[in-house]
Image (cartoon, rainbow, N blue to C red; front, side, top):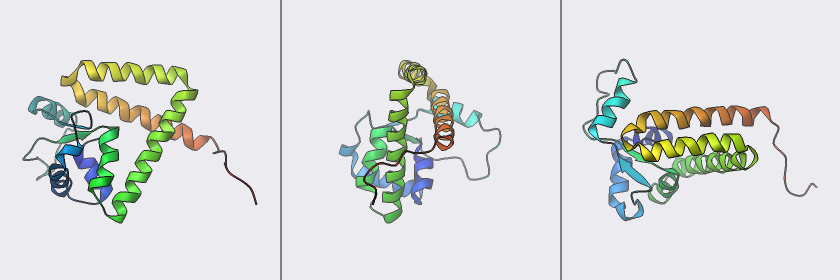
Amino acid sequence: MLDKDLAELYGVPVKVLNQSVKRNIERFPEDFMFQLNAMELERLRSQFVTLKRGEHRKYLPYVFTENGVAMLSSVLNSRRAIQVNIQIMRTFTDLRKLLLTHKDLKQKIETLERKFSSRLGQHDRAIQSVFNVLTQLLEERHLKPNKKIGFLR
């Protein structure tokens, strides 16, 4: 997920999120977070036909992996950050559960992961594809009733 999107979810300015990460940079190895290069950022921008005044960034954005998002909870210590992080982690957990039950979907996502890792210069398309798959998964999840677990009183 892009730093801008996470900052919006957490209710903090992007600058605050990135400063918190930089103060705790040892918690964010390369497989938790990476920075887009200028070409990747330009490709990402070209997907959006118009940008509002002031939406251009001075610095290249950071992208956080699942582990990086989880680590953000130890860096951002606000009530909202904790709640957002819990929801994001539940989404990742639900995704893993779905992967266990939907082999064909698992194969599609693994294919996307291979493309993503083999074409580091094409982050924008891979990230968009992942978001499309996640959206489909979440829509399917809402169609099925959740099984209640635990003891009934």
